[in-house]
Image 1 (tube, rainbow, N blue to C red):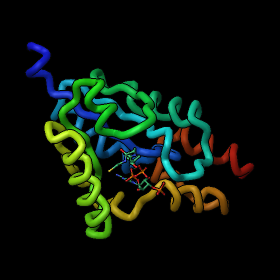
Image 2 (tube, protein in one colour):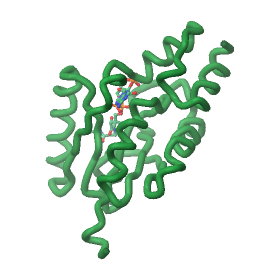
Image 3 (cartoon, rainbow, N blue to C red):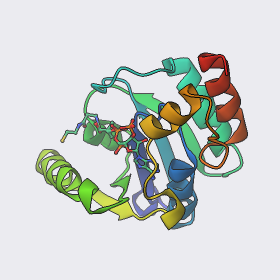
Image 4 (tube, helix red, strand yellow):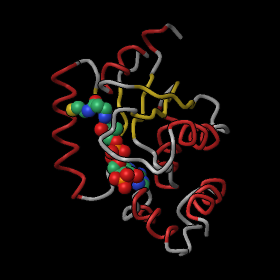
Length: 164
Ligand code: COA
C-alpha cells in the first residue's frame, strides 16, 4: 500500500491514567486504521497524578497486543503532531451529550488549523460512558473497588500511589 493510502490516526489524551474506557476506544479504532498512535499530550492544563514516564509505560502496556497500535507523546497542537506523523484522523471518544459541545468546538478549531485532518468520534461501550480518569482515581484514593475500570497493572500502580 502506498503511503498516501495508509490510514493513520492519532488518539490524543492526558491518560492519567489510561482506563478501560480508553482501551475500548482503542479496540474499536484498531481495525479501522493501518496505524493508530495513542499519544500523550504533554502540555495539558491538568495536574496529573502520574508522571509522563508512568503514563507512557501504562499506555505501552495497554497497546502492546495490538500489532499496529503504538504509544507516543507530543507537545504543541494535536493537529501538528498528526501532520508530522502523516495522520489524517484524530480519534476522540464521545461518552455522552455533555462531551459534545467541547468536542465540537475542538474539532472545528482543529479543522481550521489543518483542514486535511478530520476528527472521528467513537462511542465506548455503555459500561464506560460514565467513566473518567478522575472518577477512577477518586474511587482508588478512598480504597474503593476500581477493578472493573482499569487494566490490572494500572490498578496496582494506583494502589501503590495511594498506599491502599
Ligand atoms: N473512557 C473513559 N474516560 C474517558 C474516555 C473514555 N473513552 N474518553 C475520555 N475520557 C475521560 C478522560 O479520562 C478524561 O478524564 P479526566 O478529565 O478525569 O482526566 C476526560 O474524559 C477528558 O479526556 P479527554 O477528552 O481525552 O481529554 P483530555 O483532557 O485527556 O485531553 C487533549 C485533551 C489532550 C486531547 C486536548 O487538550 C489536546 O489535543 N491538547 C493538545 C493541544 C491542542 O491541540 N488543543 C486543541 C486546540 S483546539
